[in-house]
Image (cartoon, rainbow, N blue to C red; front, side, top):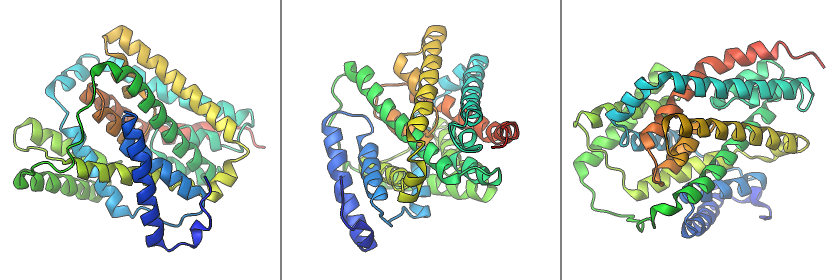
Length: 354
C-alpha cells in the first residue's frame, strides 16, 4: 500500500489519517472476530505509515499512561489462586522461563557464529524481552542497533499476530463475544481512584527506576488493593481502546525506512529465527498442558516470547486464565531483565571476529 508523499504531510494531518486508517483496519478485524483487533489495526496502520516515512510519533507520556492502564487491566484479573499455583509449581515455571532464555540465546549465538547476521546483532536481537535495554547495550558491543530494534519489533508483531490467530481458533468454541459497550455508566469515584493508582504507580516506578515500571508498578499496586477489597477497578472500553491504539502505534511507527533498509538483506533470516523461537515456546506450552493440565490457549499465551502488554491485551479479550498468563509473563520479564543483558554480553565476547 503506497501512501504518496506522507513525509511531507503536517504531523496533525498524519495523525488524522493514521487514526482513520486504524479505525478502518481495527473495525474490519473486529468484525472478523479477531482478538485484540483494536491493537492489531493501529499496529498495521502504524507499520504502513512508518515505512512510508511518517514523522508522527507517540509522545512518551501518553504511551506510559497507556501502559499504566493496561497494568490495571491485568491487576483486575489477579487472584489469590494464581499465587497459590505459582508457589506450588514454581520449579516448572522457572524451568519454562530459563528454557526460553537459553533457547533464544543459543539461537542468537548460532546466527552470529554462522554469520547469518553481522557481528553480534543476532545475540541482542534474539532476547525474548527487555527490548529497550538490549537495543541500547547492543551498540556498545558493535552490533547494528537498527537491526537489533528491527528484530525486537518484528518479533512482537509476529507474537501478536500468531497469538491472535491461535486465540481465535482455540477460543472459537467459547461462543460469540458480547457487543462493545463503548460508553457504559461510569462510577466517577472508582474511576478516579483507578486513574490515581495507575498514574501514581507509574510515576513511583519511574522515580525508583524499576524495570518496566510503567506497567508493572501499577499492576502490583492495583492487584494488592483490588484483592484487599480497597479498590474497584473501572476501565471503560473507550479508554482501553485508546490504550490499545497507543501501544499499536508505538510498535508500528517503529518500522522506519532506515530500519527497513538495514534489515532488508537479513529479513528472511530474522523471520526464520522468530519462527524457530515461537515453535520452541509452543513446545513449552504443550508441556504445560501435559504436566499441569493447563488449557492450550492459556498455556500458549503464557509462554509467548515477549510483548507483555500485547499479550495482556490479547488475553483480556479471550476466554483464558489471565492471571496465570500474566503471572508467568511477569516472572519471565523480570528474569529476562536480570539475566539477558549479562548473558548476551558473555555470549557476544565468544563470537569470533569477522
